[in-house]
View 1 (cartoon, rainbow over the protein chains, first blue to last red):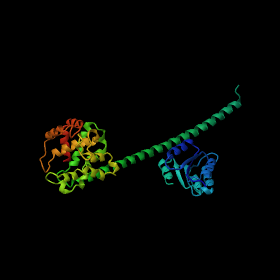
View 2: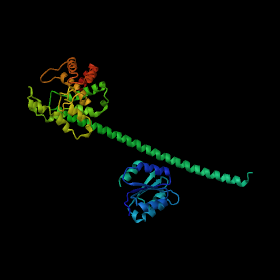
View 3: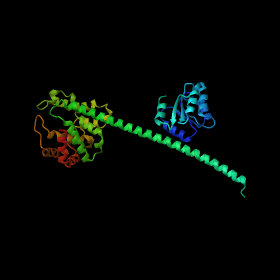
View 4: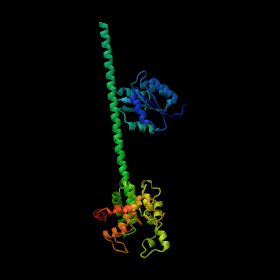
Amino acid sequence: MSARRAVLIVDDDPFIRKLIMTTLEGVSEFELHEASDGVEAVQTARRESPPLVFLDIDMPRMDGIEACRQMRSDPGMSDAKIVMLTATAEDSARTRAAEAGADYFLTKPFSPLELLRLVSEL
Amino acid sequence: MRTVDDEQQLRSRIAELEGELATRVEEAGEQELQLERYAADLRETFMQERRRSEELRSSYMLTVRALASAVEARDAYTGRHAERVAAYGLALGKVYGLRFTDDPEIEFGFLLHDVGKVAVPDAILFKPGPLTDAERLVMQQHPVTGSEIVREIDFLGAAREVIRSHHERWDGTGYPDALGGEEVPVSARVFAVADTLDALTTLRPYRRASSLAHARAVIEEASGTHFDPEVVAAFRSLPDATIEQIKLRVG
């Protein structure tokens, strides 16, 4: 198992990834990793075992709900905190994400202070 | 030549581009909302920070005033000496052209200059006659004691210089470090004039209060010996009305 010193940021929109990376840079000693779809996210999670994941729902190749499910089945990820980034319209997706093992929801547009709070709680 | 097929291909390409455009527009709208949220959080954080720093500033000021009053409460004669000296010092500093007049640290220093007197016994502090050499040594220790008392209070910053050096003289014959000329911190050089002004123009057990004109003459007389000549020059251009207003306001 890895040292678990990473935060994983997953969104297909590079603008959102950049925004989150910039917000969290240097805030904690955790390394920041990014992924642009579910497949890449699951691979990175397996490699880094991040204790915190920000995960968009609507993405190409594999959506955030499936990615969440696969991460949860990874023994290295069983107690990671998975935060779903959702649009307000995705209420039904929330239910499915919760069933897939998501811990927390941030509604877009999300509050940067909330992001910072989640990371500093680690 | 254009065929029907070509036209259909073109139409479907246009539809495709329109779809892409619609997606981009939607994305741009989401990004804009996200940035607005960042801006709102930033504004809120800034205002909260400003409120807190104002609260902190005011707590510092109240704490310093409380401590200064505790020092003064021992001596009925000096009354509100520290408050007046602080006001004179700030007014003089402004004329002298010091940037520090906006800096609360200097005001803290003016207010707390005599904090070390808490360690001077009543028998010496209130002795009606002249002090013996031994008593004078104890008395002259108060700037050192004062600077030790506040040594670890970081928010006092440059105030600590005023506390330690307020009895230094321009000609180097002051205490506790016998600093001379510009070795004496500028805040302490300004303070020295303000302190003498207040001492002369208020009633003391051993003499009556002097007129402002007399106080001005005494200060001029000591320019270049006790006082920095440039500070005295600044004092010369400080209007009587300003000094009288302070005296009236502070009491």
